[in-house]
Amino acid sequence: MADSLNVLVVGATGSTGAEIVSKLYNAGHTVHALVRNTGKARQLLTPDIHLIEHDLQDYSGYDSVVQEKDVIVYAAGSTSFKSYYFGKNTPKNIDYESVRQMAMAAENHAVKQFILISSMGVTHPFFFLNLFGRVLTWKLKGENALRSTHLNYVIIRPGKLVDEGYAPEQCILYQDDKIRNQAISREEVAEVTAQCVANPDLVRVTFEVVKDELQTVEPLSSKFNRLIPDQNRTPYTQVKINT
Image (cartoon, rainbow, N blue to C red; front, side, top):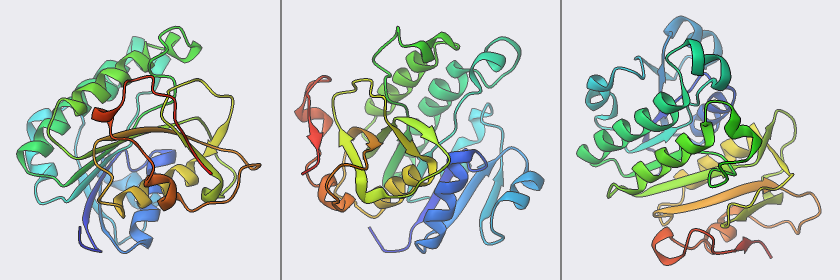
């Protein structure tokens, strides 16, 4: 990939999405933010971000949204319990169907890379988070919809998200989808995402990521090199990607 890319961030005004936009912009990419309200987005994002106002439920417009984009980062998430009963932004709609529809549009337009921000624990249907609208079940369905395409994808499954802390070199990558009582900051997830964009050799991989301050410091790029592509492992291959 070229050094500077056209990157579309879906969910750009969310807590994690806004961090991703900032990291990608600072890395020199041309960032396009898919938002529901440009007025709100303009208050949150730097003026140089290209805003695209579009409702995620309007699947018919996805072709124009993804056109001429090199990379798509899907960081949108449902609002779980409340929306499951009262709104449109349900886990089924946002974490599955919108992912599926956008992945198909991306494939039609030869997007080079699709990065999906998912969640640790998606293969654990009885984990407490799944009580909220079966959010983990729908996230897994969204992952599998992306895997069913021919796109070069990266699926990132963060642990518990927090707002404080930044030490990406202390992040640990796993490929076993076990539940871990470890956190990772939104800014660290954003850095992991930005470095995935900078690593075109990451092709069709899934990994969990948390931070452990006791781990040996190592660049993320070195850990990326040891990731196993999805087609070369079973869903429960236990791999800890650190020194």
